[in-house]
Structures are given as C-alpha cells and as structure tokens.
Image (cartoon, rainbow over all chains, first blue to last red; front, side, top):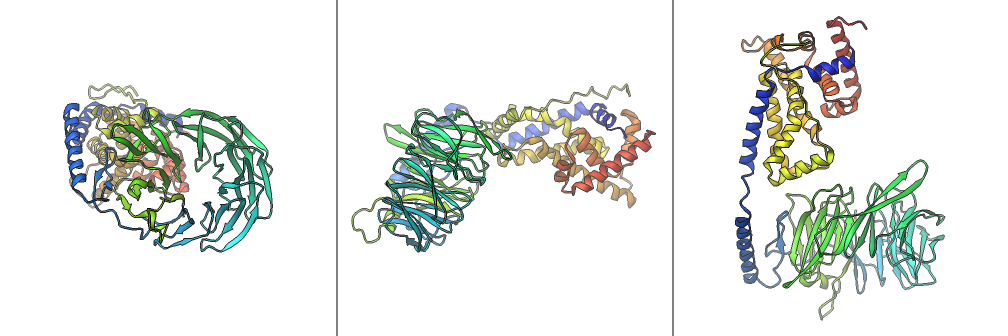
Length: 400
Length: 187
C-alpha cells in the first residue's frame, strides 16, 4: 500500500465520538490529578505552616543533644533535624573509595571504612579506575598504589600542584609553579602545555583522547592537545573562574566562579579532531549566593551546586541540582551553617558534603527514596592521636 | 472519503509542544498546576486516543486505553524524568495496552465468548481502510499505527514494543502488502 495514503488516512479520518471521549477523558484525568495532589493552600497559610514547621524544628534542635544537629533530607523544601548521625566512619555510604587529604597526608578510605595513610603528600588524585593515586609533595610528583607503595616519582623545577589523571590512565596533568605540564602515566616523559597558567586545576576531556582544558595566564579558556601542547581552541573565560568541570560526554564545559556558574557548549568533530568552544551562558541561581562548589554529575549534564547565603543568623548552605536545559534547580539539602565541599559519588546517586563546623560528612541522596546518611567525628579519624581539635580533612576524590 | 455524520468531529490533531515547552508543562504539573496538566492532556490526548482506536477498532476500548495511559502518567508524574520526551512514553503505554486488549479479544472470539465483539461497525469511518486494517493481526496494526500515525522510526518502534528491528520491518512490510491487496491497489 502507498505509505503516503496510509499516513493521510490514519491522521485525517474522523473518529466517531472523539470529542465526547476527549471531554470524558479530561474529566477523569482532572479528577485523578486533584485526588492525587490536593489543591495547594493559599500562600499565607503555607507560610504559616512553614513557620510552625520551622519553630517545631528549632525546638527539636534546642532539645536535642549536642552534636546531634544532623538534618534529615526532605526533598525540595528544607531539612529537618534528626539525631542519629553515625558516630564515626565505618564505611562509605553507597560504596566506592574516598581519597581524603589530612594534615598528615592523603588517606585512602575503602568502602568498608578501612583506611590507609599514603604518606607525606600535599595533594592527591585518583587514577581513573582507582588503581593508583598521583600525589604531589613540594617539587615532586609521585604515582602510588592505594596501599601506599610508591611506583615512581619525578621532580619538577617548581612546586607541583593540582595533579589530574587523564581518563585513559596514560597521562597526568599538573601545575609546576605557574606552568602546566603533562606527564606520561608511567613517569617516563613530560610535555609543557603552557609556560604560564592560572591557578585553576585543569580538566581532561572525559570521552578519552588526550585533550584538556585549562585557564592560561591571561585567563583565557584553552583547549589543548596534551601530547603536543598545541592549542585547539581558546575563548575568553567567564570572569573570576576558580574551577572547571567537563560533562561526561564532553559536550559542555562548566566554569565555576564564586558568584555563579557558566555553561559553555563544546562542538566536537570526532573524526576531524576539532573542538570549538561556544559562548558561555550564565546559569540562573538564587541571587546573592556564593558558590562553594559545583560539578557535573558523573553520567550526565546535571550540575550539582553548593551555595552559601548570608543572613543575620549566619551562613546558610544549600545543595542544588541544576538542569542545564533550563528547568528549575532542585534543592536536595539545606542547612543553617557552612558546607565547604561537594563531591559526586561515582554512580551519581549521592553527594558528599563537608560540614566542618559540625565535624560531619553528609552523604545526601540525589534521588528520592534514598536515605541521607551523616557521619560524625570526621576530623579525628584522619588525625589519630591528636589531642587538640584536629583540622577538618579535604575530600580529594570519590572513586569507583 | 467525505463521510457525513453528526457524530463525527473534524480532526484537529494538536501540534505537540516543543521540548522546552513540554518540560515546562511537566515541571509545573509536578508542582501541582492543574492548568499544566490540562495543557499536557490537550497536547497528547488525540494522538493517544487515535492510536488506540486504530489498533483495537473499538471506540469504548480505545477510550479506556487512552484514559488508562493518562492515569498511569499521573501516577508516575513525580518520578518522570523531564529530560525525556513525554509522548513516546505515553504512546508506548497506549499501544502495548491496545495490543494486549486486541489479543484478549481474539482469544475470546476464538473460544466463542458471546460478549466478544466482532469487527467494529465500519459505517462511520473510512470504510475500506477500516475493514482492511481490521483484517490485520493486532501486532501488525500496532506497528502500522506507530510508524504511520505517530511517525516513529522502525528502530524506535522496535524499542517501544521490545521487538527486534527486523521483526518490526517485516511486520510493516506484510501489513502494507496486505492492505494494498485488500484495498485493490497495484503493487
């Protein structure tokens, strides 16, 4: 049969009683919708209800024992108090291994909570599959096994920092003084990418080829081929960039500033090997908020953002999930206090938030149905034997 | 075709909203906007109802199936991933339920259930096409509707019905050949 005719017939033939069916269907659907979600209360009543809820929460917090200020997760509204933070780190909620930087050096925390101090290094980063750790100390860059066994070390002419292992596992980018360099994963050769770069950690192109993005000394965003150092494309970076994140598929770069986040399309010709940076577009966030951290989800384009807002009562922090396609941000956690770090779990199901003032890590679910887990007494775990209050550790990574 | 019948309304298939508009409607419906839900309904009901009708050939059943699909959508609204388009998700429910209904009807007819309906009365609609469609197995009607009414590619149809793509292509080919034979078209 002629396809065009069939298409026309299926689309244009009137159906008997169609309008009546549509009207009945709408009545039924509207009724089901109303039963599922009763009409919202007027704004004034909602505010009153919210005020009562807050008062109740405050009372609960005041009456609860010291150190029990962990809030439960209530999606999209605000957090409520619970008093059952786990007293110490006995495992990594959701699994995987953490890399944690303490004053004594980086620690590897396995999924079962066991941990090992790798040595006296100042910064560290996971290799893509967690088989190694690249760590820096002074002018030295080292590759270490997670059990602490050193594999190799190289010396640079200046202080080494911001090591980042490539997704392929065969390259490590790092800053040495102001220069940006790339070392082979076996420590046998290195390439200078830029003699002068901004103090922003470089990011690797996630899909695989040895391409990275960084900020040069003029604070231009540069995409470069890592084995030759040649520039592929460059564009003026958003003002005040302090961090970068590249989406898993490589299609978007995130530029993080203290006052906002910017998304930039990256056009990629996989066969021709070209990368073209598009214009950066500011992502709408709550006004007057300071960005404490932001990163793409491991498997997609959702961006997690940690914000802080000031009020007369002190700082208030919130973690949002932002839909770059334009949907509203979804708040997954909020608390009165200062959260300082945000790290995605490898499977994207949790965010790890650091709360130094409460000496806690919060493992916040990103999907409904999962439970928030809070772990207390974090600092002392990574500074054993220290009698005075230990510094709160920094989270360097959460690996597979 | 030019059928004159008071019970027949002019066809006016709504243009589906753009992806951005649809995401906005779903977001607002998730937040409790009855208007957004109504707009979603208006955008998708006619295609859904029409698809069900051409698969089952029964007005009442088509209405039930389309209603069920929308009720399922309301149940799943909070869990719906807004990055995904709404229509394929809805159409998948509609067509799979329509196929299930068609299979049950075939079974009832084959075991002599006195309440089982025979082919729908053709007088109100393009008679030759409806008669021809009614003679296709329900599985072939489903792929025809997904391909030529709802415009999915054979690959998309295969995913929606969880069939190998080759099976979809062969069903389409057989359906077109049979419709052509029944309608007296020359190949």
